[in-house]
Each structure stands twice: as C-alpha cells, then as structure tokens.
Length: 363
Ligand SMILES: Nc1ncnc2c1ncn2[C@@H]1O[C@H](COP(=O)(O)OP(=O)(O)OP(=O)(O)O)[C@@H](O)[C@H]1O
Ligand SMILES: CC(=O)N[C@H]1[C@@H]2OC[C@@H](O2)[C@@H](O)[C@@H]1O[C@H](C)C(=O)O
Image 1 (cartoon, helix red, strand yellow):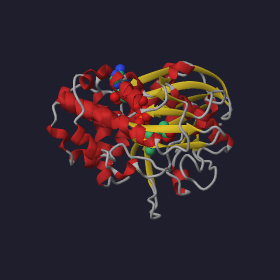
Image 2 (image 1 turned 120 degrees about the vertical axis):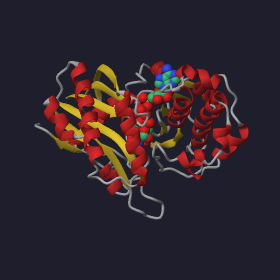
Image 3 (image 1 turned 30 degrees about the vertical axis):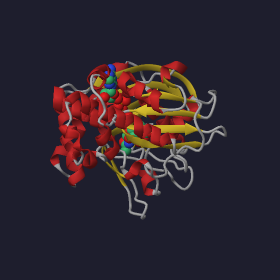
Image 4 (image 1 turned 30 degrees about the horizontal axis):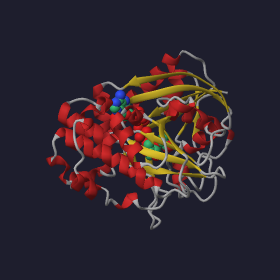
C-alpha cells in the first residue's frame, strides 16, 4: 500500500513527511519527502507543554486542545505538500511526556499529542496513530520503535551494524550477526545543545557546529554529567526529552562561555553514544548515522574519535537521513493495519513481539 509517514520529533523543529510503498515487511519504494517547519509561536507553545507536562498537565487543559489542533493542521499541510494520494497515514504526533515503566514495576506513561480524527477528516485518508501506548501497557518502554524499520532497510548490509539517530534525543539500533535486535535511547543529543544555542545566540540550533567547534569541552562538567546513572544502566531503556535537564541545571554548565558550553554538550552527546556502544553484545563493524545531528561536524568528529568503528552518515548506504523517522512511521502504519508487531523484547523490553497502534478514518 502507499503510505505517508509523519514524524514530529523531540527537537520540535517541524514535521517530516515521507511517502513509502510498503506492506510493513518489505519496502516497494520511497517517494517524496517534505519537512514543514513549525512557526516560532507553535514551537514555543509545544515547548511550554513539554515543560508543563513534567509538572503534571491535566489532559483537559485548554492549551492542549489548541496546540493539538494547530499541530494537526501543519501535519495535514505536510500531507498536502507531498501531492500524492495515499492509502494510509502513519501519524506519530508530538511526544510531550515519556515516563517508561520503572524497574520497580511502576506503570509507564507515554503521551503523544495530535488529533488523528481531525487529520483523517482533513486529508480524507485512513490514519494509524497511538503507536506507543500498547507497548507501554504491556510493560515495554514504548520506544524506540524505528528498529524494525532499520532491520528491513539493512537486511542486505554486513552485520553487526549500528544505526544511530541523532535527534533531540539519540537512539541506537544494533543488528547482530544473527540478525537479533538491541535498541535503546543513548542519551541527550541535539536537545540540550539547541536549548543552549537558543539561550546564548537566539538561533534555533548550532548551524554546522560552528559555535561548538570554536570552544573546548570542559572536562569537569563533562565528567560530572557522565556520572548520570542512565548511561551505565542496561537496556531496555528510553528517555524523555527533558530527562537530563536536572543534572544539566545542577552542573556548572551555566558558568561556561557559549562556545565552551556548546563544545561540552557535543562531547556529552558523543560520550553517551560511546557508553551505549559498551553495552552492545558485540562491537559493530560500522556506525550509520541519521537525524539532524549528522549535519553537525562537531558531533560527527567527536563520534569518529570515540567509537572504534567507522562512522558514516546513512547517505553512505543510500538512505535519506532526514526522512528515516517519517519513513519508519509509514512502514509502522502498514504493520498496524496488518496486526504485525511493532516492538520486540530486544527493542522495548516487551515480553514478546507486540502489535500496537490504532486506526481511524475510512478504510
Ligand atoms: N545543518 C545543521 N547543523 C547543525 N545541526 C543541525 C543541522 N540541521 C539539523 N541540526 C540539528 O538536528 C536537530 C533536528 O534533528 P532531527 O530532525 O533528527 O530531530 P527530531 O526528529 O526532532 O528528534 P528525535 O529523533 O529525537 O525525535 C536540530 O534541532 C539541530 O540541532
Ligand atoms: C517517546 C518518544 O517519542 N521517543 C522518541 C524520541 O526521539 C528519539 C528517541 O526519543 C526515540 O526513542 C523516539 O523516537 C523514535 C522515532 C523511535 O521511537 O524509534
């Protein structure tokens, strides 16, 4: 079927939309891709919701309805901008809170906003949505979900292989020699760096890593941040966009100059990936990097220094590093229709391969 995948990631920069012909198990072909940036006001309002959700946002708060409607309208515009007819849309929505189940058996919560019924009405296309909650209800982390898509894409590539997505948060998919999957979030990536750059320069991100490349990472601050217990915890594990906020705020980061702070946050992102690498069952032959962070030479250089295997942007194997997450939700949408599993013991820690997602709109 022809699917359109829609992803609004943790960096809140906009919505990525991509066309994929797929049955959920194989890819017939990729089509067009667009990114529609959010207007500054929507970005600000979404960011405020993320902050408020940490403190306990009521599900009937009027600010939610308004943001959901505006967010959904931009998604419908992205679908229209692709200019194709599709059978199915995969609509991730915007995560505003992610609290995976605790080791002590606390019940998890993952909250994506977006109005799937409205999107189905605006586009006239059936919509698969709510991809994460069935996994969380079954005791899984609810994230990451892209690994099954990475596995389809990488079928013919030499293993062991690591695919790293550097978004606001970074996540890793490891495919072993035997095809087994191990996947988890490695740590903060562009999220804290974007916050730092916005605060010190007013820019939305550190374009081409210029600020970070002009600075030097502060070894003391970095060392302190790297003591975070998340980094040595065994998978399965996943993060909220703001999970490192408290340790960042409690560190001496704020005393650093803008370039040194940026360099320190780049080093943090790269060291978190290296720490993740140490948790893998065998060393990867190669690291393929997707997501906006691959366009930051400061991060890519730090990774090349810290990792023991070659680090390449996913374009090296012909994939589109800006489209991968959106494409994944096209494939996941097809899996929802067919009742195929979205998550696995090695990816979210769910007890057995687990289906998920819901459907709305006419079939
Ligand atoms: N040219 C560039 N130079 C430096 N950094 C860049 C560049 N382009 C994008 N980025 C970084 O990539 C980020 C966006 O990455 P991406 O779109 O992969 O994140 P996301 O999908 O929102 O997040 P997640 O994968 O965590 O959900 C930006 O916020 C910015 O920090
Ligand atoms: C809860 C949530 O939205 N998590 C996102 C986030 O962004 C990156 C990382 O953290 C990853 O775990 C996940 O997204 C990708 C698409 C995933 O589920 O695979």
